[in-house]
Amino acid sequence: MAIQWFPGHMAKARRQVTEKLKLVDIIFELVDARIPYSSRNPMIDEIIQHKPRLVLLNKADMADKEVTREWIHYFKSKGINALAINSQAGTGMKEIVSASEMILKEKFDRMKAKGVKPRAIRAMIVGIPNAGKSTLINRLAKKNIAQTGNKPGVTKAQQWIKVGKEMELLDTPGILWPKFEDQEVGMKLALTGAIKDTILNLQDICIYGLRFLEREYPERLKERYSLEIIPEDIVELFDAIGRRRGCLMGGGEVDYDKVAELVIREIRTELFGPLSFEKPIEEVNEK
Image 1 (cartoon, rainbow, N blue to C red):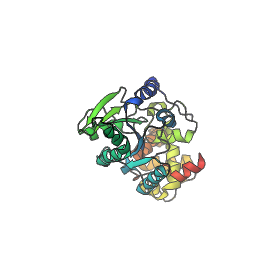
Image 2: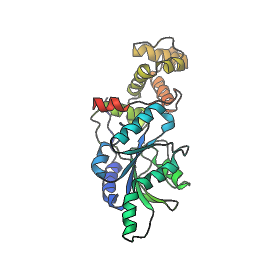
Image 3: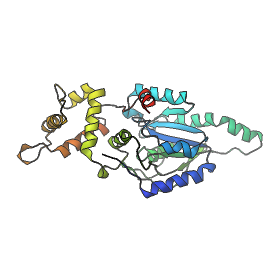
Image 4: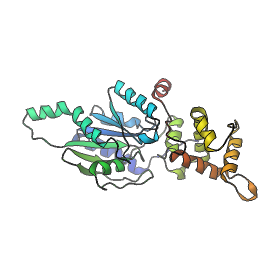
């Protein structure tokens, strides 16, 4: 299944980011801590070029903590500052401001030496849909300013938001690249909710998720669905889950669509525990 999704407002957002770049001091690149590689937009490097950047691994509570530490170390090895945060709970908000001040210290020292009046740091937030940008803005601003929603594509316009006296944020719509050259990237984005379910074949996404759990977290999979063994045949696995969880049609036949919806929902809502779908050494070696 080829996954592609590039609504018109995203093409417009790319132009807006490019146009507004000169107005900001730093870029906050928001990624999903469960898929830090796949949720990084490959166009971002090209767009922001040498602008200072802070990568924010959001939803860190939903990811494997040890793997997240590996990702932060990886980014730092590439000269990119990175923080693990949870915008929903407000974890890591103070560190964002202090990290930004550290990254921009030389620039603001030079401005001060030239007699420029001190001002707030100006930051732009970029990221793919459903990465949690609006929730992060509301947490930083300590009030509900940005529209939020548990679905991709909620934010569609730019707005400046004050964060105390230290910072001003320029929100931007989520940008998703127009074509996935690696379909596994598309699968990970779909599984974690970055792409609208209505355009997906959920059974294919479910199969990808089950095979991942079988490979990386087999005991959690067996425990969740009371399986003594994990059937090698995917139809048998769907049947086992469907019968144990009551995903049945008339006549007692398993409803595979309901099984797919169930598994995807339970992956997304942490019923398998915190999951990391990729590790830095794997992505670096394979790409």
